Length: 143
Image (cartoon, rainbow, N blue to C red; front, side):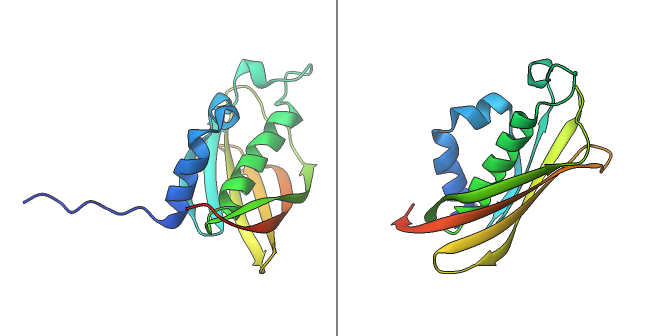
């Protein structure tokens, strides 16, 4: 007897839909480890072309990875959501070869607004940055 196929969750289906057209997240090398409603955890490896003039991970790369995790988490409910505002605080610099984990957690979800906190840590558990995102939830269903 064959095993029954596992059905994908709504969050996984939305992620698949988003990644189909997200060339930038693919270019960054983002690997999604887990996605569920209001949550996303992904990781990437710092490449030489991601470094700034001081041989540290460029802040724009960190920001972009956090923004992608934010997008995957806030759209995971199946309603198209877009950023209203974001902020990012940097605590430590990433280095070439680091494996950066980006974890997005929903802090609040209302009819039109969601608030998310995204942490970036390296392979040693050192927190590199903290991103906060507020999303606007449109009425457009994604699936």
